[in-house]
Length: 165
Ligand SMILES: CC(C)(COP(=O)(O)OP(=O)(O)OC[C@H]1O[C@@H](n2cnc3c(N)ncnc32)[C@H](O)[C@@H]1OP(=O)(O)O)[C@@H](O)C(=O)NCCC(=O)NCCS
Image (cartoon, rainbow, N blue to C red; front, side, top):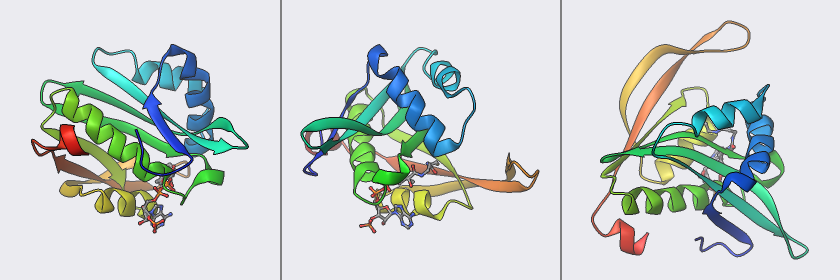
């Protein structure tokens, strides 16, 4: 499900939850990552992607997407790539695969939110064609108590995406 050599992306199963939780803990500095991931994936229509990179012939977990498709909208809750594997195309491969899955699930749009203080993620989403539709001031509360605005981004899916993406 990816055009980058050495990177593979697939729909995650129950057996991938530990790997996704470990990646979630790494990328979001989260406590109780397993519980958080399980909670994300509990509602109907949720799905997850796992990206792996090839290391000496072994497929090593490197990144994930957590998302939900309801009717014509897919919401991406979370995207993360292990620090050691960042800037090698894993995030872009995950976003391309998410787009395919969303389209095949009948979605017409993908929405997600990102902090204004996350230039890397904003650059990735911009490169993937996402556009800002809303700014929510003070939406996130950082560990030190500082408030940070969230940007709501949207990608409108074309009819051809399911075939070609
Ligand atoms: C954001 C994140 C998922 C990007 O994953 P990644 O695998 O490094 O992304 P890619 O290598 O596919 O990058 C694709 C493009 O996105 C942009 N990009 C990605 N990370 C960037 C960064 N730190 N700074 C600037 N641009 C960046 C670049 O245009 C990049 O292309 P290039 O490397 O050819 O310049 C990763 O940094 C991450 O997990 N961060 C921590 C968790 C997080 O913030 N998730 C998003 C929450 S909304």
